[in-house]
Length: 185
Image (cartoon, rainbow, N blue to C red; front, top):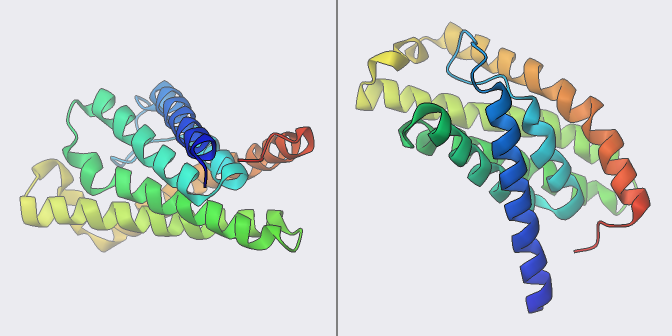
């Protein structure tokens, strides 16, 4: 990979992170029964992952959620153990599966599978991180995260609240950008 391609990947990752952080903050203060946020902004790293690859999607999402979480909570503690790695895993999977199916011109199948499996994996990482903080570190505010029914309910909430945005907005955006021909890295 030449230096121009590396610079473009770095720029796309930074743009992904900035857009994701900014748009995440728009809904970060809406209350949910869980510490996890209602986050329609997931469409941003999903689109970047589908168009520009797993690393651009995953790293941009990780950095974006790190920034948004620090601005929202004032500390990196929660996001270091949950949101940052969870977002990286989720959107890396979205990009990986989209790219895997792209060769057979079935990118939408890969994108849909990536969204579902990515959210499942990402929220599992988040749940494990919050469980760790609740049990090992002993953060009282996370005591609910030691209950399996609570964790499973949070998992369902997270997937059900984010998947529609990734699918209903993500697919048309990716299609439009692909038709415009600006997907080459």
